[in-house]
Image (cartoon, rainbow, N blue to C red; front, side):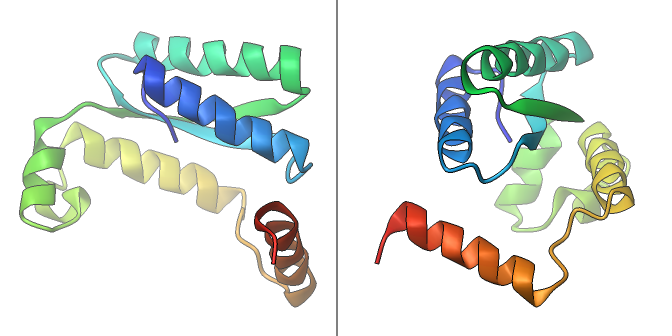
Length: 128
């Protein structure tokens, strides 16, 4: 997940570079948060995707955008999920759509050998 802010894009690229270096994934799903419009989300995604393909041989999959919404901050202040506090908010709809995409693809780790492999890769990255 990233936002259209330049520093966030730089941070996301660094994470993607690490994923590529350690060969953790050949394709990564990306969500762009706090977008002002679909065009801004698409532009951010395409910028990162183009860069990753050119320099990292890593492909990104666009899982969607979450629009900048003042109700998210209000929900945070109430310490409640925005989808519960403001179920009709645009951002809540975005989250539901993205969750549907992820669940439809069954992205979850569901067997012990995969969990073990993931643990081994984290140990390789972070040491110990």
